[in-house]
Length: 102
Image 1 (cartoon, rainbow, N blue to C red):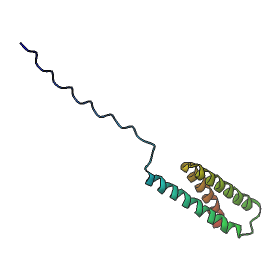
Image 2 (tube, helix red, strand yellow; image 1 turned 30 degrees about the vertical axis):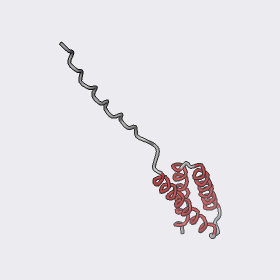
Image 3 (cartoon, rainbow, N blue to C red; image 1 turned 90 degrees about the horizontal axis):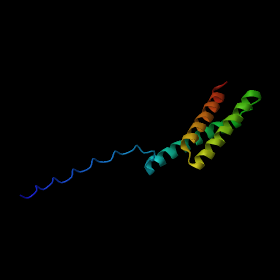
Image 4 (tube, helix red, strand yellow; image 1 turned 45 degrees about the vertical axis):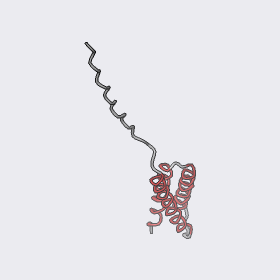
């Protein structure tokens, strides 16, 4: 008596895809462009502040905003979009607060 043919092995379950930190080029470009736009906006606000006669704490705050903006530009150059975005937002908040002060 012949042995029955064994059943073909079941297909292994598909490997679970690990979440990826990688983004598509389009997403990265969009994020990079978004962050670069925030840097430009903050730079424009600081430019407006430069046309004002600031003194004391206001001048210190303007300088702090400019330093944060420099850090944002450096992070953007390194490709660290998260840090660039954070620095640009912080610079914009400081600059906007000064611009809104009468």
